[in-house]
Length: 179
Ligand SMILES: [Fe+2]
Image 1: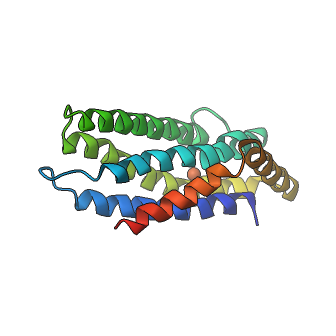
Image 2: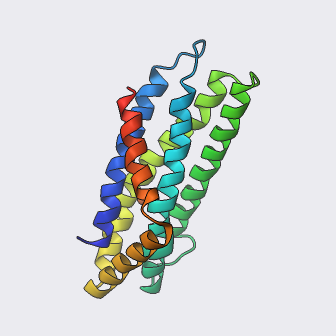
Image 3: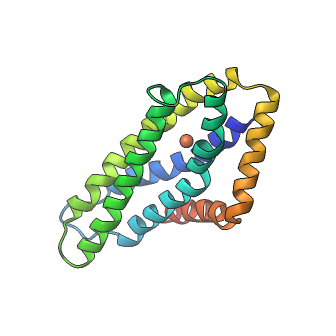
């Protein structure tokens, strides 16, 4: 398996959760009660994505590609890094808004709004990575680059323990089960 294939497989899990989120947003009327547990799980899922997916890109794949001459600033890598930050900011906003909602200080729409933005951001982010950045990377990387990137992933997994990857799959399953 190539180092980009690992990331494409993780995108499939993320994409499934995004579809579940789209459905949940559609099923959440402004005037009704909010399924707080679902949205808390979305926060936890996004944190797990950061730990075991974005860390592979930012810590292993992107450094390999910049080492091969792809610019870090301005090009597709700079764009992907910026979108990772935008996603983190939206999830922080969601988490804080959920606290406010539970105290009666925020509306359903206040909670739904960052979720809609997150959904759109991640959908197009994934399609740009799958359709543009990863194919560009595959063309630049030798077999040895690929092997070193896979080793970098494994080192990262060992460092953080198996929990992050397990969390990713468990939370995705739990969120789908709630539809
Ligand atoms: Fe990604």
